[in-house]
Amino acid sequence: MILHLLSRESWLEAQSHGQLVAPSVATEGFAHCSTEHQIVDVANKYYRGASNMVLIHIDPTKLTSTLKFEPPAHIDGSPALPHEALFPHIYGPINLDAVIEVIDFSCDEQGSFLLPSQLHTFSIKNIADSLQHWQRAAELSVNEWKKYFPHDTVQTYLDLYEQTGQYAGHFAETYIAENTSGELLGMASLVDDDELPDSSEPGPWLAAVLVLPDQRSHGVGSTLVQHIVRRAHQLGHPAIYLYTSDQQQWYANKGWKAIRETSLNGIAHTVMCLHLR
Image (tube, rainbow, N blue to C red; front, top):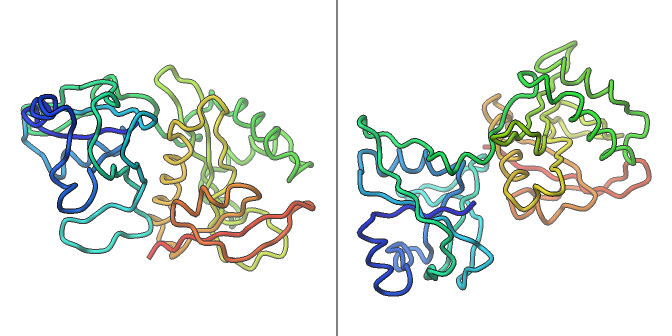
């Protein structure tokens, strides 16, 4: 979901001109936008106490200007950090026929912003706290990864979920995306060892990123990956690794760098790294 935050007056002015040109287009080349999982933090950081704000929900497929997901542009000019989430930037005017919805976004009596009810699309949870999803998540994982790990069973994954955190000298955490109806949308794990033969990388690893087919292109995968990256940074790791057979470009677009080629169960993979410091 692509959202742009602006004053109600600016939105009225945009309608009179037939397009929205954010002031930052002239100074930075693009309009700042957010996803539904970023907008509250952005609003509370830069617009706390503002009572005249609205959100415009944008359909990226209808934009006539270029949309890019990029590191945040810091107001003080300091460089973005590797663990920071990528933000949507629109390079040019926002054509009004790309606006799906206009949402009132006033702060509360304390000056704080809360996520509007219509933007509650999905949340990220530790699977250890969501036992109702264990069986389904395990079955999906066995089916998705059987070509790489043919000996894994549903019990393999159930054991992993039960051992969340530090156990027997190892570490693993699995996070899920869940919609407002309580349905499982996807999952991803942070593990100290992702069972790659002959690996010399110190870990930890982003592992088992899986999004249900009908939920792809909705930001679920990106949000899960960002959550795992932030978790690795919180734990003090200088870098995080992954390996992939076919999603190299998707990860490269998020700042990951290919470091070597390898093989897993006879299938070519690329090992990639994201430095967190």
